[in-house]
Image 1: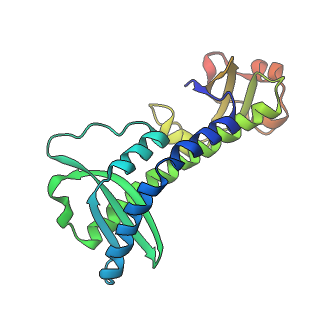
Image 2 (image 1 turned 90 degrees about the vertical axis):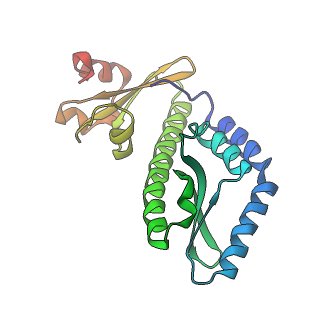
Image 3 (image 1 turned 45 degrees about the horizontal axis):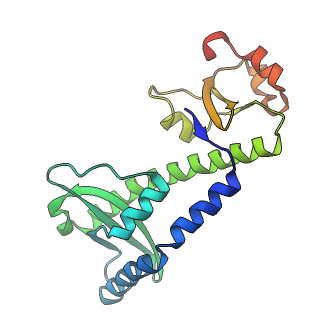
Length: 206
């Protein structure tokens, strides 16, 4: 699964600049949410149509949201954890969903937030891999344990625990592969050289 890891620092700076461009518009949306909860003290959730700036920022962070299906609409689900502390999730729901209960909102947010945490875990690992290669410019391979998020997302078929990830550097791109090493190899992944990784990798990658 090739990804461009050419410069983690440059990628972060570019992301910050793109997000900053919409900060004032996003603050107006956030102020509307704040007023809603001030005026509805018994509520912990707000479901409203997604604002254009929320689509724009979602596209910067995650790519374009999928097209709306017939009868469906993009909403923003806002959850107030405590006064002044809120979280937001972009969700696709039936057009009449604005009338759903607090309990239903809580369930939808829990599912959406689980996906957000998973995406954040993948992105954090991606940045960690990028920094590792920046700090080890002579290396073309990295072997490390597979994370739970990678087991769930990166490969189309479910992968049981015990697999490792081998990342191959190809120019500015990096390609990830699932590999089941022998237990003795798994215990020393961080200490292995490129040559040792190649020698220990089973034919076919698993």
